[in-house]
Structure formats: C-alpha cells, structure tokens
Image 1 (cartoon, rainbow, N blue to C red):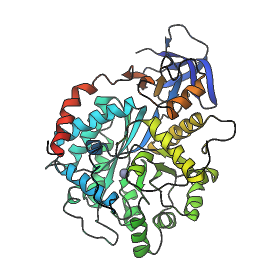
Image 2 (cartoon, rainbow, N blue to C red):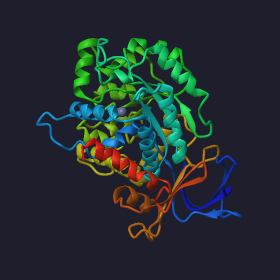
Image 3 (cartoon, helix red, strand yellow):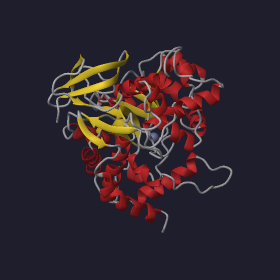
Image 4 (cartoon, helix red, strand yellow):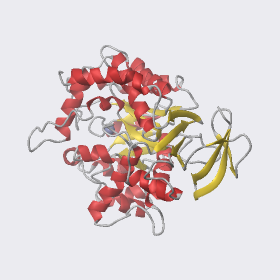
Amino acid sequence: MTDRLYCPQALLGDGWRDDVTLELTRDGFIDAVLPGRHAGAECLPGPVIPGMVNVHSHIHQRLIAGLTGMSAGRDDSFWSWRERMYEAVGMLSGEDFEILAARAFMELLEGGYTSTGEFHYPHGLGDQEPRKTAGQVLDAAARAGTALTLLPVWYRYGGFGRQPLSDRQKPFGMSLDEIAALVNGLQGQVDARLQRVGIAPHSLRAVDGRDLPDLLANIGEGPVHIHISEQPAEVRACLEYHDCRPIEWLLRHVEPDERWCLIHATHADEREVQALAGRSVAVGICPTTEADLGDGLFPVREFLDGGGRVAIGSDSNLVTSAAEEVRLLEWGQRLRLNQRNVLAETGEHIATSLWRHMARTGARALQQPAGELREGCRADLVVLDPSHPVLAGLPAAEQLDSFVFAHGAGMIDQVRVGGRQVVRQGRHPSRTDLDERVAELRGRLVGS
Ligand SMILES: [Zn+2]
C-alpha cells in the first residue's frame, strides 16, 4: 500500500482544493494534507471526495429488494411490506445471511459508502446464538473491506404497552441482560481500526422507553440509534399510550445528546423539529427506503435552519448508491417546497454542500474517524472517473453535481477504506463470486 496519494482536486473541510497530497500513516490514516505533488505519491485519476457514511442499514433486507412490488390493495403500506420482510428473514440460514451481507456490503462500497451503521436485529437465525450472527456481520464487513459500526438491536415488545412479540418477531427478542451481554461481549471482538459497537433500542414501540436509562447504564459509550417516528400509525399509538408524540417523549425523558442518532424522524411536528435542531443529536434520513415505503418527508430545510444535522442511510438497501440517496433527499425537499437547490446556501454547489455535511454528520453518528479528508481521519475516499462522458472536462464541483444529480453507471473510478483500494474501476473484485448464490436465494424466495 502506498503511503502518499496525490489528488488533482480534493474536497477538503473548507471546500475544493487543487493539487494536494494526502500523506498516510501505515495503518491508513491521514497524517497530513500537503500542498502540491510529492515524490512517490500515487496519482489518483479524478476528483477525490470523502467516502459517504451510511448511518442506517438492515443488510439482510437487500434480499427482498424489488420483490415487494405486488399490490396488496389500496391500503398497501409499510406494515404489509414488513410481513414480506419477516417471511424472508424466516427462510435465511446463518450461512446464507453471511454471504448476503458480504455481497451487500460490497455493493454499498461500489455505491460510494465507506462506513456503514448496521442496525442488526435478526439475532436468532435458525438456531444460531445471537453472538454468532452478530459475528457474521463483522466478518462480512471485513470480507468486503468496509468500515462498520455494528448496532445490535434491542427488540423487546410487539407494540406500545409491552405487548408480546408476534411469532415472527420472537427470534429478534431479548431481555435487557441479554442485549447488554451481547453488546459488551462484542466490544472485545471488533477490529479497532475499522469497527465500532453501539446499541440500537429498536423503537419506542419495540422497547419500553422507561427501560432506556437502565440499558444505557449497562453498556459502554458507543453510539445509540433508534427508529423514532417513521409511520403515522406509530405516532398515533404513542399518543394513545404515552399521551405525547415519540420524539417529544424521547426529548422529555431521555435527554438525547451527540451519541444519539434518530432514524426516520419523518413525522416530527414543528415543535419537535426545532427542539431536535437545538440539540447535538443527528437525524438519519433514508430517502429511497422512505419513498419506497410511503413514509413521508422530514422537513430537512427547517431542521438545518435551526442548526440541525442530517445524515443518510441506505436502510432497506433497495438502492445501494450514495449519490441516489443524496439526490432524492434534495429532490424530496424541492417537491415539498416548490424550490430548487433547497439544501445549499447561496453561492454553494448543491452536491458539494450536501456530500460534505452528510459524510461528516454520519461519521460522528457512527463514532467513525472518517467523513472528512483531514489530518487524523482514516483515508476513506471515493475517486470520480473524470473520463466518464458526463463528467469529462468539468471543474470538480460540477463533476460532483453531475455525479449526484445526473448519476449514471461508471462514474466512480475507485473507493478506498483506510487507504486500501476496495473498488477498482467501479467494481468490487470479489462481488461476482457471490452473485450466483444470492440470485439462488432470491429465486427461492419468489418460488422459482
Ligand atoms: Zn430501519
């Protein structure tokens, strides 16, 4: 591995810079950002941007991508999708799961994500112990070469008011002692250079919020992620049971700080948006999944105006491209507000502004030393292909705008994690080895 990378253009913390060399430590961190081209530096071919950070993934859901398109009638919704997903989880063996996960992590790397936060809840696949299944997520990430923050999910109840788990939810269920033991056991198992462990209380419907202080007292200082307000039915059930909305309840009882990332804060009302924006929490938006599930749109512009911070997630992994996720985030706000370039300030390039904000917020939410090209961060980066016909001859900021908004195949030349090249000419070299096995799994699911 080379220890110097020359970037003809690089997206740094203060904007685009021409002619810089990244000097790397032996373990793949940026030691210095030097002006000019330094001796022995490997020349990267195109504009260099920080690898995108994916704060929310359920890696096994890649299995059903595109397989939930049969209408269940006028009231088809998230809840009928969830039944299909449970069915798919039920047919996975541990071995299937690890292969599916490795291949999906490779696809995410090809899509420009260098770190992923895995909100992991299929703990008991077949008769496997939860520790084994969690270890398979770590192994699959290592096989693909991605950085990973593993967020084991605490799933305890089937709905507000401590309802029992349904038969399909039972394999995910754990007591507080069991989830704390899992999280604490995994702490010693991770590769400290690339991997972290946090915790994900699933939602206020699957966990009784009053148990959260006990949970947090029994684990370390890792990130805390929660699904918070994805569906109107969930907000209604919370109002019925707690007499307040989910975000409102969390803010009142838990005091979330920078460890916290609130996933799908979609149905936040105006007061909740402003209260969240004034805190150091991140909000994780998953635009393509939220669109696919008909969830709704979070008021991102208003949240940013209040000082809020937003990250993106690939969630169901229906789409594994960071560019598509960033584009839909912006387009959703355009459709909502009848404006253009909603999430940039005057004079800024939209994709530059979004990419920098999302990568940095995401890294903080996953406690990964990444998301920026600066001294002290791991050298996680994406290099665009300046010979692509849509990008050729353009300045770097226009190349990034085109990559995000006129996205097409072949625009990424390479992806590196900790300096190591994991995607070459847009492809992960090990992915095709797993294609057949995953195709067979998908065929089995639809009965062909
Ligand atoms: Zn989720």
